Amino acid sequence: MMKVSYHGHSVVKMETNGKTILIDPFITGNELTDLKAENENPDVIILTHGHADHVGDTIEMAKRCNSLVVAPNELATYIGWQGVQTHPMHIGGSREFDFGKIKFTQAFHGSAIFTEDQQIIYLGMPAGVLFMAEGKTIYHAGDTALFSDMKLIGERHPIDLAFLPIGDNFTMGPEDAALAAEFLQAKTVVPIHYNTFPPIKQDPEQFIGMLKEGLNGKVMNPGDSIEL
Image (cartoon, rainbow, N blue to C red; front, side, top):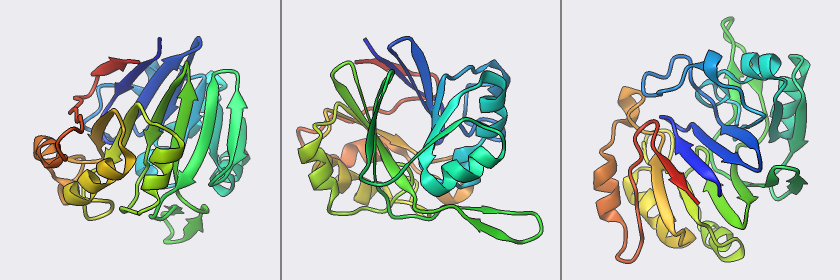
């Protein structure tokens, strides 16, 4: 059985096949998380894109734990330059690992690091993630706008649990995320990427109320978990 937990902003933890996997571990500086970076020991870290509120504690954590970081190619290359073990992938590509299968999907957003000396390091295309293990499929949309190919993602890969951003301003807002849920037809939809900063303040229960009849939405507080 796979245990999936939510930890504020876009942080998701999956425990399966004897491994702990973190997606977008923005912990330090995340006032909504229940985690402490020094207490986490992930075997694998999956990154959707290169923004600081998603890469988060990846480099320090991966060095301490000898974690494998799986990310889009340019981001994986940059992370690898920091002395971290990485596996580069890209949109549309999939890979079987001993802990499960990962496939990157498209996402409409950006991906870069902004340096203190006002330089921008471009880190390739942003992505969403399909994670498949123990006969279950989890979709983490990353940061993205609504796009119609979400229908195709749901048709090709029946989804048990989908994490969708609802914060608006930088990503989909609640209305578009509700339509995304309709496109995906996931068994359960969980809102993420909201309330961390003032520009993305949202009411997650209002989003749940926007879901079309027959769709199952669940608000997860930091630390809440689901068993699949």
